[in-house]
Image (tube, rainbow, N blue to C red; front, side, top):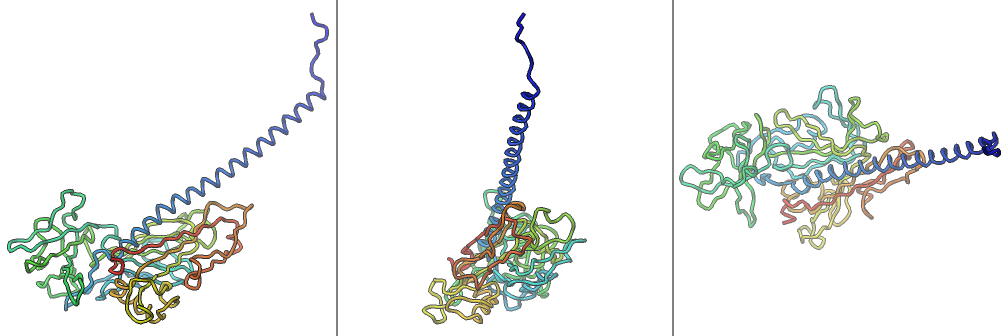
Amino acid sequence: MLKDQHGFSLVELIVTMAVFIVVVMISSDSFNLILKQTSRLMHSEESNIEGMVGLERLRYDLQQAGFGLPYEFPTLAPEYAEAVNTPASTYNDAPSGIPRSFSSGNKLEGESDSGSETGNTYNVIDGTDYLVIRGSSVGRGNTRWTYINYSSDSPKPHVWPSAADNITNGAWSIVLNRVFSNGTYTNRLVVDSGISDVKDKLYFTTTYNPNFLGSNNFAPKSPNEVHFVYGIADGADVRMPFNRTDYFVSKPSKIGSMPSACAPNTGILYKTTVNHADGKLSYIPLVDCVADMQVIYGWDLKNGGVAGTDGLIDTYSNADGSGVLGEATSSEVTTALGDAASIRTNLKVVKVYLLVQNGRKDLNYTSPSPIALGDVGELSLSRDYTLASDMLNYRWRVQRIIVRPKNLTSNQ
């Protein structure tokens, strides 16, 4: 038997336990720090992924603006309807205006829509812009198209090989006749001359059928004519000869509609569509925790300082034309914004800037302020956003979208 065997002394145990506790505390602090950093990065990446998906939707609609829009109406212009609630109704071209590819409002204050969803009011964030885009492919319904050649027999729309490319049977559609007039081509809306009531939807729209287009009055009348057919809406009703989508930043009043992690004074970037059935808006949330949206237009209104076009951007404006930089005056830009033909032929580029929260609140971080929304030299048209005190502990990023709408003649 070994006589020198003995246990640990009390002092040795206390020292060992103290060292062990210190190691555990250090490991715990490091683990908590890793968890916090991981959580922040995860929320940041969630915001980035959400932003990319939502902003690609906006980019697509900007590119599609004007697709399938009529440039001219017949002598007896149709009367149609658009949005019924403010602020959307402020930007209507109805009842008989040639539809504009774009219309917009600058730095809205105190605007809300309370008629689109029971128990919910959508309050537009003060100081943000409002953007309206029109075209057959910016809605939620039928976005396909085809054409009809002249036929002395019963004319039939062209049927594409893939069923997915064809307008849905029974979908509401419009018909455009591409006419060469005054040295240029124009898309003239075809109406049913057999219907005398210009307020009747059957006067300016028809239901699609691959074997027969509702009425021969929508078919080409001579061998050199080709009519183009655009699907507008599926369902039981149609109220306008195009689709319309509105983009804006709004805070819903309904409890639980707004993410709890969003900073004060922020809202949700919505894509809304004007319902053909009732003129109310359908809301599609795209990006959460948005503090601001600003819209800037780039125009070709001058040619060497005089009226005309040379294919170059000579003027930039804010959303309503009240502020301009360049050769054209505010009055000239405002006039262009109100005229569908001028938007098609003079608008070259659309810029949209969004101020978006990046991740959750971080008490160990203080954001720089103000934050510039716009390129160098554009801030007089956009905004230098000053963060409120309760927004400083959030990280922010500026999302910048610049698009040359490909369906405007100015870019063709």
